[in-house]
Image 1 (cartoon, rainbow, N blue to C red):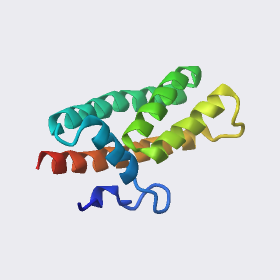
Image 2 (image 1 turned 180 degrees about the horizontal axis):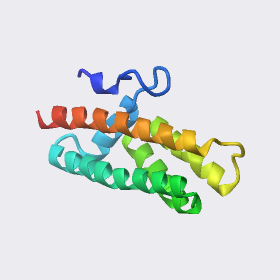
Image 3 (image 1 turned 90 degrees about the vertical axis):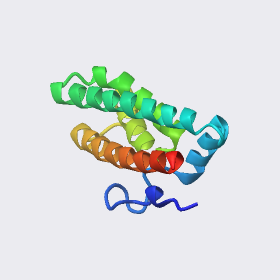
Image 4 (image 1 turned 120 degrees about the horizontal axis):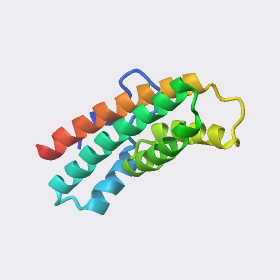
Length: 135
């Protein structure tokens, strides 16, 4: 199967794909390869909910109310890992670590910008995957 959506479109971290092929295939197997509608629904739910989480992180950082970014960073970290968006998950984990006080010296503004950029990459990759699933 051609996995072009897993390739780096030129932004982000070197050659890190937006979506880990192995993690995504594990998700497909867990949902069931014979249930494309369920998988697409799951991806749509992730995309909608994650867009709101990214917006909440951005708002918390721009308002200076960093405590309000903790819960969305944690939620986005977990949900991104479950669909194979490992770099996005790591970026959120680092932000969460900083907000919890266990990762000192993080440039929050830069981290939030990287989360924004990576989320766009993840959205694009998942849209390509959804198109493949739906045929």
